[in-house]
Image 1 (cartoon, rainbow, N blue to C red):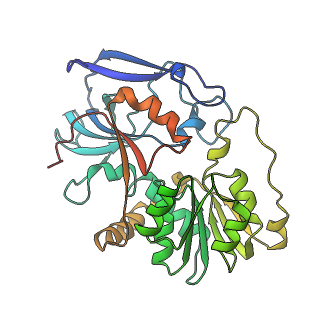
Image 2: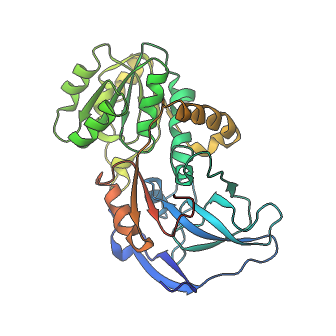
Length: 340
């Protein structure tokens, strides 16, 4: 890419089923210039997240669809290159929402300054960003785990799921993860300290959950829905809590599946509640306070899966739904001056 040009990936069409390369278009445009009250950001890292699939549709949802012919939406960590905004200076590192492009213009409302001396700036797209907040509040606010209880989490090696299990351990719970490979099982048990792990691809979910949760399941943080939720419902305890965070198993479905049997929710007087991280923005400081302390104390570990180059974003995004990523998936779009 020419340094005088802006590389962008546009949403060309809405997918039918799983996204393909044909849904995206790679283009080059002139680098935009900031007007009064704006900043020009150079993208260093782009976050790739499952929720983006929901935005690639005109189906009614909690968020407005990504616009066809426009830059694909996404969170970014950037460096301010030019500023005509009183709160930001050239050289600042910021987390924002510039989408799938090398340079973006922001009016500042969605930007938050980052201190590269605290934690790596890429963490703002993961453990100290939206996925970390998702893990923290879905587990603690809806799940309300108590010491001695059993917490199960699906997509347990991912950006949010891995944090859920570690916080469950900090709170004195038994943590059980469901993942898609033996390598991921080894990681969450031996590196992150989960008590048990189930490989959903090679093990029978019902019998494996029964063995891993001998005292039943008190909290299930659900990122997938589908067969895992159905199996979990057979093992829930009286008064169980289920934060419903994601529906990865359904995002690419052309026809929505029939739901699981919800009778156990009635019998066990269990709670299932939908979760959107945007509802917790006013409590961001509370989250940062606790997670920063846990990171500094070594109680939380974090893994990133970094792909290089903006042009690699579509393939990496498609792989997200096959579980190809291992850790928080981000794209390194530009040089990171904070790396030593």
